[in-house]
Length: 208
Image 1 (cartoon, helix red, strand yellow):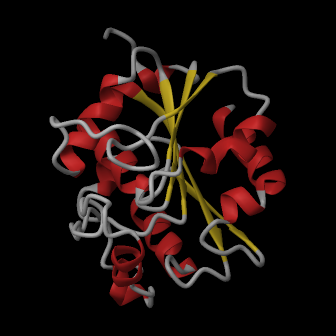
Image 2 (cartoon, helix red, strand yellow; image 1 turned 90 degrees about the vertical axis):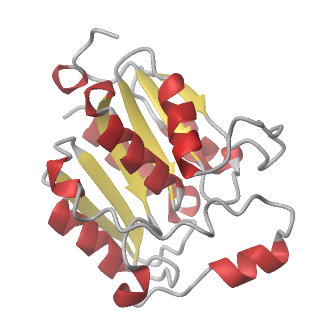
Image 3 (cartoon, rainbow, N blue to C red; image 1 turned 135 degrees about the vertical axis):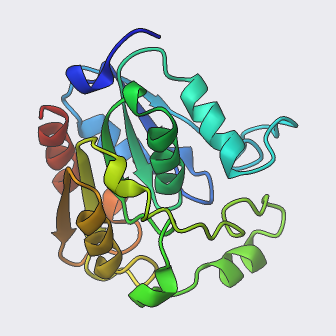
């Protein structure tokens, strides 16, 4: 691929779900977006009705899978632990990504130091059949993120115990081109429950 994503506006929007792989999560926002780019909702193999893929064994394989879907300048729009995949994809191939939108990202940082509630035990108990790729991931990406010079919109709710506002503030402090928006009353599903607020923010961000 020859294009320079940093010189482009996105012609494709890739929506990434969180740790439960709910591809429908981003539908309310996608339906409200007016940006003309093609919209694609990606899922995780073995999650949410997506068939397992024997070639996928963990987060790095998911990153490879996401990058394999990019054949034009693209923005990654990610929920929760999907934001980890988005950041890793952007770190691996920054020339492919025009913009990032990270909603309540709940990994890639030392979340316990930010006052976050640990979602892993309850998720494992409620969904014992899901692969453990997300729940077992604990890498701190923040030392690498200052090199990521991609316009990034950070969306947080001020009532989210899983990824508190301090997590968004932490990302905003290390990502050079990040803008943080905190939505009053928003919980961990803020992008879906407040789609009418979130969609205009994303439209504006993608026009930068």
